[in-house]
Image (cartoon, rainbow over all chains, first blue to last red; front, side, top):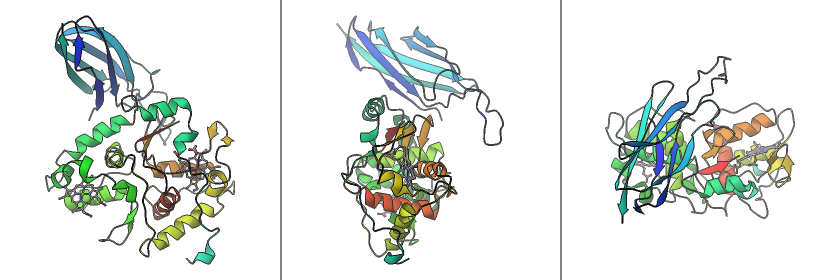
Length: 107
Length: 246
């Protein structure tokens, strides 16, 4: 199960800068750690995360071994029209996750 | 075990202080921010699991307990507690697994699994702000005494007891940690060093390891008894689940 927490303000004024926050539960295995038996734990990170605002890509992150477990990202977008803020990501093992929220933009 | 066999008469630290008061500003800020706190990911997951049907019964926790915010409020503050059915001391993890086995008719969750941590944290969070409230009575007296005995007895290659660090030396530095009073009120916690959520028993095992003593397994009688003693000792503090630690 891929769990995420997404924070998008439900309402904004047109042209306003709004803060988007997302936290994803993921071990972000570096590929440098070993298990109790001395075997290397394969690298598994959220390698690709994309955010789309009404279908248009507005943010992309490629995260590797340098990012701590349970990554937390925060950035800003300009509120232009009402619609969906959608995230999707995939990790090295091919496991996919997604989260989305709706923002209402008023004049 | 009789009172005279105790290594010391049980006492609460004075003034009573939560572990978060010994944490740095960054850790305190994280624990207080319900969005940024990584522990909240386990709460989100716990809430999902609470509502998911499981086992032969095809019932979810919510199917019997409805809204956890009402039904589980104050529950974890009274744990560990002697289960009337089995007459054994049970913590929240154990109680959840009982419901899985008896009521949902499915396998218990592994101690320290993400699922059990998530449900424990989710149930625990419904008591956030509620005073820790265990009562020592004839049913749990023996567990309490055993827990106290472990707390005050020297152990391991370092020959130290819990009391030496958590009663006599709280507020002092040990390597790069500030020693707290050793309370269980924020557990399970997200520990930055672990990069994940961990149970109270995992933390206790780390302390046993620290003094180079033999490690009791998670969920063992020793750790349950200790958990009860710690809950009694932290009476006066409030539940802070889910906590964040360095």
